[in-house]
Image (cartoon, rainbow, N blue to C red; front, top):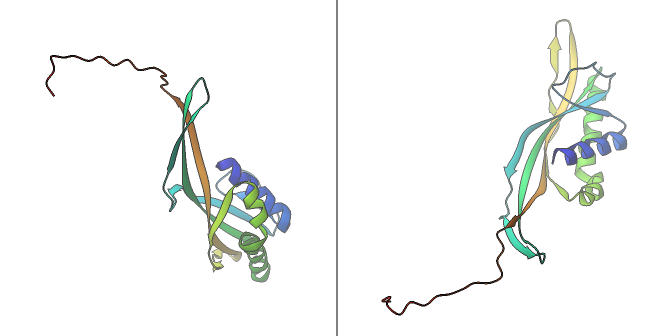
Length: 164
């Protein structure tokens, strides 16, 4: 799932022209405007029921489990003015609301919910760091498969002395 989130961020950055980076990492701060994302919750159970199925490959019996999981991302846009922060955050938000639909379909993901823009600015010593952000919830299907014991013949024994 993390690889899918990384591909979402790359597509988002490419479409909007705003550099989007992961928070809580070492490195230089990019030039304004830029945006950050943080995975605030991961692998939360989705609303659907898990689906368990079996497939006979001829040599193995494979059990497959599919389940919906939800990831919540916190997205923030940073800029040197409040207006630019709002415009950048809104461009990113609109991508999730509308423009991302085709890309999400390609990677088998769904945008569940996109929150409204919030003022997340902070006063730093003698200047403001203008920041606007929102949360977005994404739904994925997690699939696991493994081989289970396979048998193709059962022998039954009947004991006449047993009472039923």
